[in-house]
Length: 142
Image (cartoon, rainbow, N blue to C red; front, side, top):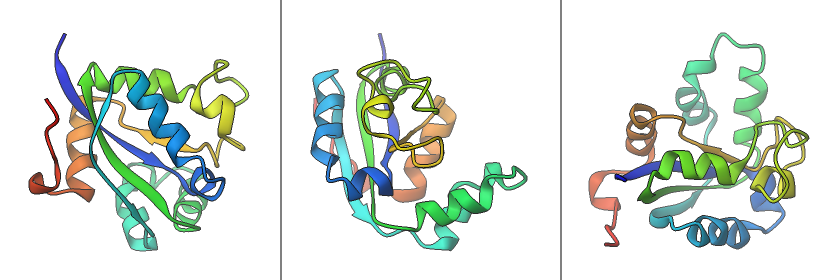
């Protein structure tokens, strides 16, 4: 299996609940390593650019406003099948449909305030990582 990197955001609702450590622990317990991480307050412009793919969707403005409502933790995770593994750990977007024991089932408030974001594919991961981190920000942990 290939070692890959994925992008992850711990969203404002989870940061406000002070569950950052619990979420990171779940990634690490599943064999993922944090190779870059920082807390930021996303600007409206950053949120708009990051979520530009959703610009025509009805939830776009609410999503951008929510992502600017408080600090977030942006991070890069590395490991075997990191993208799929991260998505399994996160659970379904709708916490009501998320499997028991997933991050969203345990911490999310709603579809909108769903605690975490994770890349959905290798190309997306590369773009999302580059949006927040430069190559020198990534610390390999082999």
